[in-house]
Amino acid sequence: MSPVAARVAILTVSALIVFGVVGATLLQVLPGPHQPADFLVIGTLATLVTLAALFVAIIAGWLKMRNIFYKRRQKPGP
Image: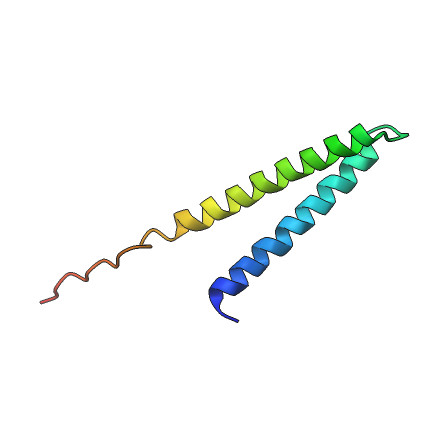
């Protein structure tokens, strides 16, 4: 598996885990019985948190790789 494919797979699996954990947590936190609007709110909040976590993970990875478009030349040595 190439490094890019591995990175995409890790981000996808982690996003699914975050979505599941947030959804399950919100199902426990909101008082029952649940109406259809409750499930809409739970899904919306879980999606919001998942996308925010994915955005942070991608930006953090991008900031680590400073030399995306060019490679610095080595200074000529004596």
